[in-house]
Length: 541
Image 1 (cartoon, one colour):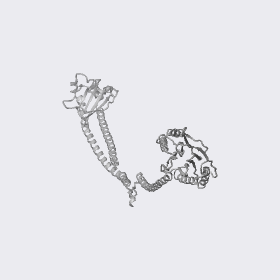
Image 2 (cartoon, rainbow, N blue to C red; image 1 turned 180 degrees about the vertical axis):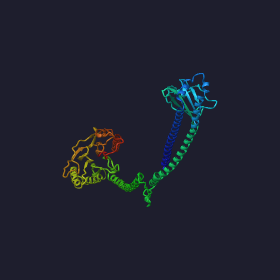
Image 3 (cartoon, rainbow, N blue to C red; image 1 turned 120 degrees about the vertical axis):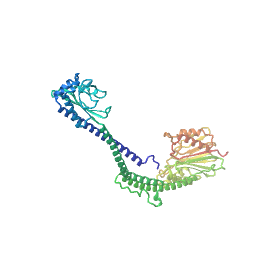
Image 4 (spheres, rainbow, N blue to C red; image 1 turned 90 degrees about the vertical axis):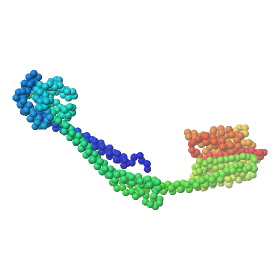
């Protein structure tokens, strides 16, 4: 079985994708949770350092330093013992808490003045040093600095490296802003720890994902893939050749899937399907064999039926008084229509056209009986009405299926042209006079044969002249139906007959059949089509 992607491949890809999504999500959440926790920790640490400094400083002295920060005597202030005492306190706080920088500033709109700086290097900012807010940092929060509001911590990775800067407002007891105690804590180690943490999380997630994938694949393979592959392989073998026909156990019946879920139900369904399919195939073989037998018998019946009807033309090559031709096209293998013609005696020709109700074998068997009885009872000097009366009673006695026959029989006197006829519910014959053409001959029809016992049928007569013709047919001709459910009809039949007045009887039937076929098109044939054409030539011919 050709498959672009197996179910195992799809499951593996799905598991890996799911594991990657889950692992990535967990790593992302873990990393940013760790980062937020550490940032909050150091921000809290900076607040505590600033609060410690504020608690150890003298509020009044700090207020004086803040108000005089812009004075020109900054060097003198820095040399005082009181100023150095504050610097010493701040340095002790810085060293004790291991912060990078600790300083106090007094903010303005465009920058800040340094009031104290604990930096002991040459880069230390002296008392009164003014520094503008640098872009993308303090300039964004200058309004809050001026109002003495709490400002968020700022994390910078610029020229000073990874640093978190906490600016804690120093407010006097009277509510006056003294300045901001600023604490800078190095984040270099924290960032390195974060990267290490992220790497560890990724590695752990990768290992967990790999282990989870392997375990889950093993479970899926045992629970899902393997049973499905077993059922697939067994089904392929069953499709290619049924093993049970060779006396061996079939692969499907040998399946054993005990997953206690839908797969086990599917397996049991496959077993039931195999059993039902085997039964269906066996029954189908029997039915097919029976149909082939019936078909063969119907072929034989078709040949028998055709052989029972006159099929050699010309039938009487030594008789010049007439020319006759007839055809039958059954709708099924065997038909219920029949025609017949035979010499009653040396100077009388009998023609019969009949249609048995129903189709198929029953109608064909009833046709044989009717044809035989009509021929056997047609004798010289016997009225055709008497013939049909006797045949009708005999058919009624053996008509358990309730069939009936519409029939027309005529006997032509080859010397005089007298045509005696009897009609038992059959179609009107077409008579062709030389000067008038074909026309439906309106005669009164009697009741059908085998419809009711003890009926009396009347014989009629008409006179034919040499060159006249008789066209007999069954209802399959005018009732032929096309795809639009339109009937061929008597008018079309009359028209095509009159187009072939000079044609031979054989040619007349060929043209009528061709015209009917053209009208019907691809629509199926529902009824037998039987026709007979008799051309009377007279004794002189």
